[in-house]
Image (cartoon, rainbow, N blue to C red; front, side, top):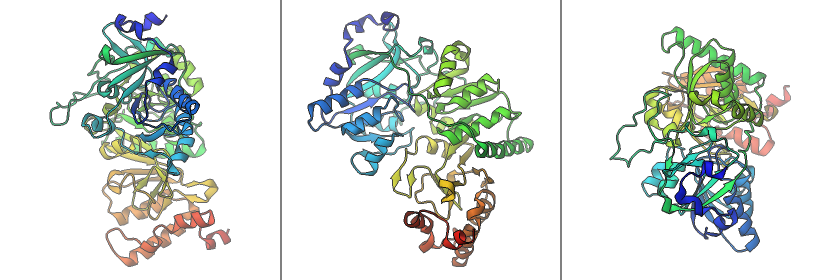
Length: 505
């Protein structure tokens, strides 16, 4: 069974236990771990490293680079053991999040298309060990990734040493769905020759110098299931607003009947809005995204999506069982690419994507905060939303208009942290409605967002703020001493609602 997957005879003598592989890693080293949104992640060597650190009781830290978030509790285990000095470019773990916000470890929040470029340019610390999950190693020494590619190809290329986690639980049927293309150095590379979603431009696996492979660890562990929640009434309404808008675009002749390639960010809201296409008349859709979530496979099953390109496959437990059991039916409809290709500005602009991502909050002029609660406390990271929003044909952000039972308005006078400026945001959607911001000046944007997207609880407060701001003048009118008053009120009183509004209810 092992030799069916480990087909390079030069590597057969390098099988070791996770504990031995972890013993090679020294204090201060930098690790490149496979994994993108809880899929295809290195699962056992990082845990063995954390256990070793706890057992030895000596100060020990490493820098951890990944594709995106890790599953299998790896981020939590490493954070609890105190072995992470610096982490990039994205994470979602509550334990790690707390450590980041308490200043116990450093977090570099990066656009997901940038990490590979920074490694290639020698800007980031050199990678000592790449630890990557695989379903197989071919006869000619190619690593076949599992359910994600992420930054694995760049880690393997630039690391001093490579550790392969050969996962026997991951279906061998995954071999053949990857398209590994690595651009050359900036200033020397050719255009990325990708002109359609289904096109393949690279190799089926990641080439590796056998002399760089320090060890191979045999594992048998599924990916962690996705934690997305089912669509609800409000997300269904949001999907309806977006579908109606796209119908209008088709009617106006601005898009073909099968639209442009679709991208959806991670998370329950974006996934649920994507789900809205199931009940629509749109068909022969294509997907060019990072994460292929449940909704994408539901759309494939329904005959709505003809092809999907992504960087990882991240599914709920039930959907994962169904997809694995029927994987031959999906093989000719899927491709997994490195994240610098799935998120590359050149390709996104060329293909003309419709990009749908989730906001924490947005303001009356269309600036979006997708990372920091109250402007300071990191949630997860910007991820790929910036890669897509700035370069897509349509940069769309979705969020429910209120949170915490109405104590928080997701539409505020001024966002507490700016991830996506008004220049990169085309459409904003809540369950209240949709605002098409294209071609609008700031004052036009403000009126449309307040009337179309704000919750009735907060609409009058926003109108009052904007009216007062207009008396101050300016291209983008603000009352600077009140711009963040909603956030300070939340911090001090537990709600963004003004007292007069609360007392009138």
